[in-house]
Amino acid sequence: MEFSVNHPLIFIIVGIIVAFVLGQSVFFLVRALKRAKELGISSSTVKKTVSSSAIFTIAPAVAILVGVVVLSKSLGVALPWLRLSVIGSLSYEVIAAQNAMEPLAQDMSSVVTDPSVYVTVLWVMTLSIALGLILVPIITKKVQTGVSKIGMKDKKWGEIFSNAMFLGMISAFLGYVFCDVTYIADGHLQGLTPVCVMVVSAVVMAILGICSTKFKIRWMTDYALPISLLCGMASAILFSNIFGGYAVPTV
Image 1 (tube, helix red, strand yellow):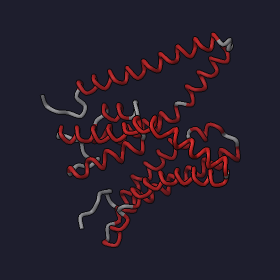
Image 2: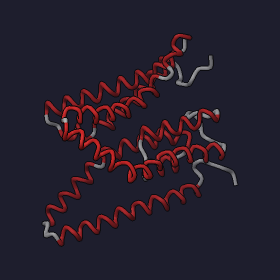
Image 3: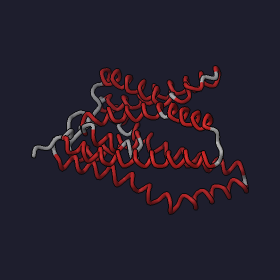
């Protein structure tokens, strides 16, 4: 059987998994509705809660769809659909896929035709994110307890500690953005593309945040992430044409 990233068998396997996840969602939704009825919560309140929750899921869904489109170029539709429908992160999945492809002389601009490369990328994306399922129940309570104790002793240091952990996570992604900037010294400007895209996305996010705060536009806050993502992707096309196609230069 000839391998294809969009083979019907892959879609069948992924469809079964996604259907199972959707079944869990329906199960807990039904349980929640029954529990609300037992507690005497009015049907109008329940309907309003369900409808508002459904509307506000559109914003993150748009961001996820962007990730599926980005990854589908090389990995097909089924695998990105699976990874971003179960347990996944847009920023993580793209970086994990690219890091797995580079040592195998494969990039995200071309379709994966080697099944061994496809399986390798699948395992890297899946096993890495699955580590969170193991660590969360083991260390989360201890970390939260430690942060709470610091906050109770000194509120200022508690905030500093929380912000430091967040900035540490962001720093990992910033390193990925700036990792190829040094190639500029050799005349290769491709390393400027991710930096410029980051700046454009940050500026768009800041503008949306200021506008939502100043003019009290709630929907702008909910859709700030997907809008900044789309603007960043559009700018990536522009900067790629200016600086050349993004690839790690060989020097």
